[in-house]
Length: 521
Ligand SMILES: NC(=O)c1ccc[n+]([C@@H]2O[C@H](COP(=O)([O-])OP(=O)(O)OC[C@H]3O[C@@H](n4cnc5c(N)ncnc54)[C@H](O)[C@@H]3O)[C@@H](O)[C@H]2O)c1
Image 1 (cartoon, rainbow, N blue to C red):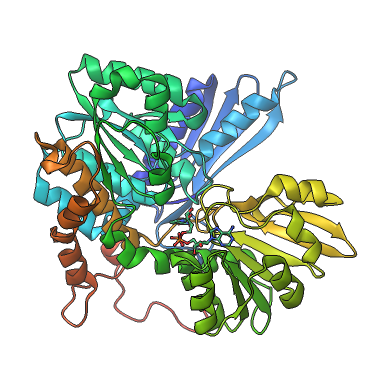
Image 2 (cartoon, rainbow, N blue to C red):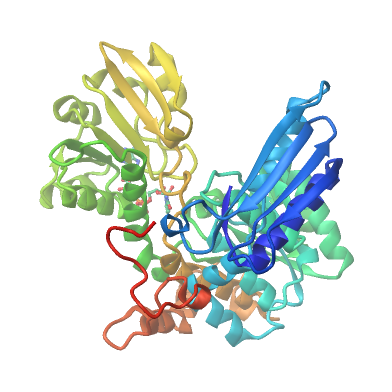
């Protein structure tokens, strides 16, 4: 496991692991550390872990530090002798601890620099702005969530009265974020399948402290559970800040006695999101397939809405021959007018275009089992839509001759006659699957907007927000807030502020060029 940190962070990581292993019934047989004046931290511990065996823990810098990111360390665990009663689960739990290292203070400082707006927002609101509420959050376990939590704490939110519902997406650094939330902040994190009991416990804890709860949601995971199981406790909630459209749809038809602050539908979010999501998703597709040849080859985008349109344009800029299908004629005509190959019939378009890559951006399901017979050539399928809603994978499995699991790459359906459909990332949105949604300096604006929603709801009159949807007022609040101005201060040229995302002063200074070709050994 690789992490970045100062010498003191690495020392703390070592102590953290030892403490965690001791919780798992480990005896420390010996510890060896490099002397304090060594250039980097290095340490080893020999342990005996019950149900596992003799284990060696080591933390050291990579062998060639010039080829690694600055301030990198590697933590490794080796079972040197398994006990006769060695239990697979205990071994797995032990190795899991390695991944769950909380973010180091160096990594946290680095992250803060990626979120100047969020930092400034929290500072401007002061240390009491969120002190008098409890929080129930279902935001993705990504590093932007770390920045958001960091800001909430800076504004006085008390970790004892916060609960996080973990949706379990495999983001790049989810384990590190999870470790930070649980171990560094001591916040209760519950897995999504335990949402009913989790809400129950949260309501009781917050009620006991006399605090009302503000909901931060990304996908409508929380309020439907309150309505189904705890509607009589609705008065314990102050309002909902929702980040995404699928969350707004899930509120349809539900009783809504509290205000919704919909960042999802806001003009502010629309200014940056679609292009950012499309770029991140396409980058993630190309990253998964670094040796594939895309230029000059056929692609198909299904769903020509805000994100699909950007995806189609980016793929064309990447020199693919792009076709577009949308079930709405107005969108289809728009795609046609912009020069894309189009057809009213998705099956017909697949048949005639034989895409190498299909990107699904329709939102609520596009490609189904019935479309598969149109594929005469193998193809990659990628989604940008939430969860696995885009492709009907159950129907694919029914139609396929065999299904193969490619682990992190995804899985494939073999249709006969050499046709393979490889569903990248198992049909999850590509920019969420072993990736991080949007670059942090993009999402910074949206995190600030979510926090502004929370701060507004925390005011005694909820800032004028009333029960139900408040889109007009939400837009007014966001558009007149300092967030967009600060964004422009940072990124609008030519007078913009500029701070590069480099390690800066955390590495030693040289008085000559530190690198020569060929590199010195
Ligand atoms: N990956 C991310 O970070 C991220 C962020 C925001 C939204 N999303 C997801 O992306 C999806 C698309 O977002 P958007 O803002 O572009 O939505 P949108 O509503 O602007 O566009 C969706 C388009 O798909 C078309 N469509 C719907 N059903 C179709 C079908 N069966 N076949 C063909 N076309 C169909 C619609 O007519 C519309 O033009 C959302 O539903 C959401 O789940 C993902």
